[in-house]
Image (cartoon, rainbow, N blue to C red; front, side, top):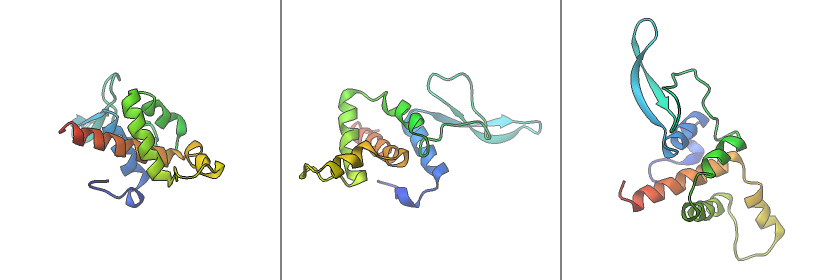
Length: 129
């Protein structure tokens, strides 16, 4: 990963990376009675801004949440994601052992989140973003 090491990040930091890669936008907005500025998030296609304390998707601990994001990848991007998932889980493509395929089938939401972030970072690099 270009700017971070996945294993060293907290779950919240990982979730923020997934959120950003999934197209969420963030902005400092005045909230509360005292109009203090807080970091708020807007989900693509969502209604309004989510303030701190809102119920955000927990991509790294919830398979349904990360699958929802991954399912929106194009077939070409999904192939790149598959390649990254192989790296993340330590898949050995030179073997035909069932135990190797189980690594992919049983990838955790954390592993899938890491592969998604790697994919989006690579795609953004290749697009010059």
